[in-house]
Image (tube, rainbow, N blue to C red; front, side, top):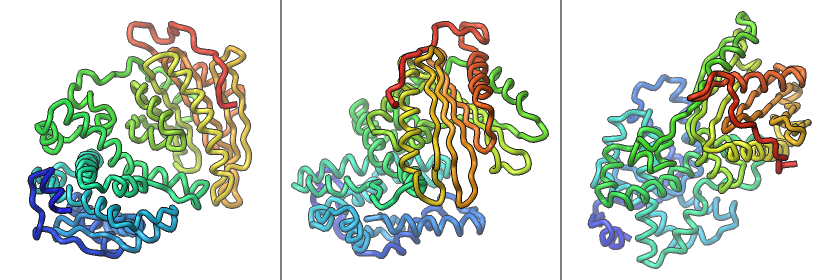
Length: 435
């Protein structure tokens, strides 16, 4: 293994790092130590939750590079368990374990060449996700080359196939929660790999040094390497949601509701669409130009009631229309995935008004949590290349009222070069595909 790594990278690790078997608990403790390096002032309660989370992650990890002790830790028990769970006995074969160790070796190589640990600590917790994409993406890209050269390509594919894989025995809300948590890990390997290869293709090895010295400013740049290379290529939203936000705030009694605005990253949006097929999710993220949200929460109990107004702008009107198809499809997938469990959907009503010339989708669902039930309404509307989503949780509106509100709010959005409320091109009214 070390010879293959040295041949590709010029770094000799023989006798300089140790490879050994380790328990999931040992790996969890290393993860916690890492987190304390990056965020040393964590409170006691936060640290308690972090340790619990790391124990869960430690039960999934196959390998971990411990940079303090210069050790590569491999979990025999996790390998055996995942081989059974995924019915993948090849996971226990020698070349698969060699591929896994090769990936971890690359973290040691990159630490020696680029001192990424010190840079990650210096930049603080806000940049950890971007550094993870660089470190995991680069390790994966180079390990793949080494494994091909050494004849371990099959082992590399087997090891890579379980990264971010979710067991079939998970269902409902539990599966969605795990999917949301694990999607960032999966993206660090695969989206990170694509990012690294794109930068390397454009700038060569100087580009690799650059991304370790100056990682992406946001995860959006990981998904769009061209934005990292040339920030002027990054699209800027050409819509103004403020008039719509102000109108909705006026609708909701101030003494009952408090409001805040937000913007989601492409990574967050991608995680929210994780149940869609990868190709479909990819084109949606590729087309998104910007988003803004207004979140209204119950003033006394923020978790009791929620109303969220979101605008997403796409490259074209056609992309916005297609997104409505995907939104309908995703909603129906959730109905099936959440049919059972502690939190479950017990009933859904849909109304696709696009065939009637109204660019609107309506969904009303009954969500049961234990013995309690609540109504969740979701409305999508389209105008030009802009999509509105109006979500109401445990605060049901009369159907025509929420539909009328959605239509009114999307018309209040201003576009660059037009007066507020000017619609320009007519919204799409083509039928949905998710019926």
